[in-house]
Length: 165
Image (cartoon, rainbow, N blue to C red; front, side, top):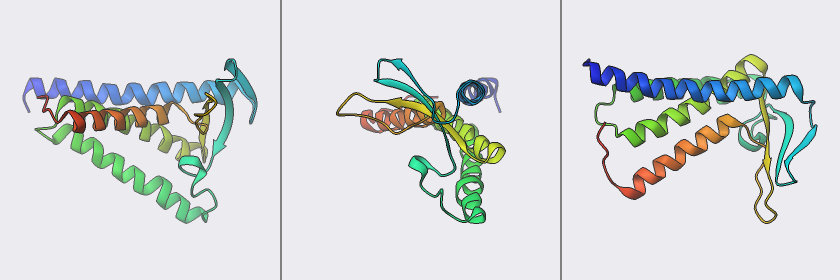
């Protein structure tokens, strides 16, 4: 592997780790400083911090599954997919920089949530946006990373331009 490729891979892996770190630091602070279901208004009632523990996936889907099935579907299979994503990120020679950046964000967010699920038995969610007609469920920084990564993928697809790595 040449030096440029090695440095590029290191940069994208660093971006992945930064995403994991930001997610885990924010969750650690919330776990230690905010009570379950406590609500703290950050920007009037438009941006609210509310701590919940989510034992399922997105919007608690799967939280009622039997423990073994939940562990398999929400931890093992995503862990395998994330592992493949990392291998793909560092080994795919013609991956565009934008695609690699998108993948770095998505993998970083995925690792943050999988770590929570395996270590804590649930994912700590705490952010809620309410703009009246538009509002979100309660989410965390890993979800922001995953969403941002997916937006970058769509931008890449829409632009249809190959940005060399």
